[in-house]
Image (spheres, rainbow, N blue to C red):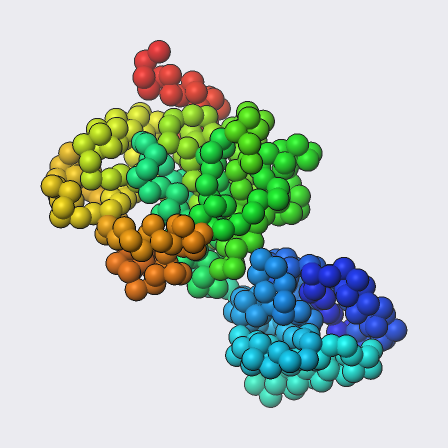
Length: 413
């Protein structure tokens, strides 16, 4: 007889241990895993697909309700049972609306818990028999295999990090896509600040931990309430020298099969780490603003990118468009001799307020023109033809050279 597989999700280790002990004498129930956060629960559920997930509500970073919502969308074959304390009826209603099948109030006995698990499992079994269904794996018809978007700008202050973080949150918020945001401004990265996250561990700590494998990398992710996962920049500028282009290439290679979208926020200059992301990326998003110095540098950057044979990947994003700037997007296109892929309207008050709160403007000001533009970007990105992530043979041969040698070749020195 098949045993009911159970995942325990609670941020308190002692609580997880107690629940596991309550279930260890049940012959028809098998605890297949224990995790301490909602984001870990999602990763485990997608990989192992347990029959039942026992989910606590109050957890840091991502609470049980948001995790339940994402699991219901991504792993519909797994049923969530909410574990709650008395007096949380409002939370319980929200959890049931998010997709939970049942709830049990703490503290509970082993018999009570086993009974609820058995009831939910039996209800699911009967439903599948009646409807003639087998447990289904959530597979979106447009599912990506690690589409990597490399964000780049010619100078600071044009809104590169703002756009990268808001696009990442918008993609993750839908619940359809697994999204990773990597802060590669290794000396002064601000991604964590923009998302109001505290980087306990960063990419520098990962490099020093040993072999770079996904099983190790994922323990260094920060988890945002949207479902977005973040690999933060080092907490001190001097730690940046620990990370090489080879490290970044290894990280991207390991994380790629596990995410639909990987967004890299690069430093605003040509250097080895950024050039590696250019090589591996499916798209390079060049962020420009409506001022002459930025456009002059953007034109030079496009020439360098052409010399690196990456022009087909480039998407030009014009940020903070406004009639008050003394030029229009057509002037920018003429200056750069290239088409603008996306335009983000200027919406200063909303954006500055959102930045100071550490809340992306797509969340705090969803009705703003800038938020509408981000949603358009995300919609076009997810509905576009999927790009084959495998590099062509010519590019594979070219990557044998180091990025710095390629850059020297372009500039002729």
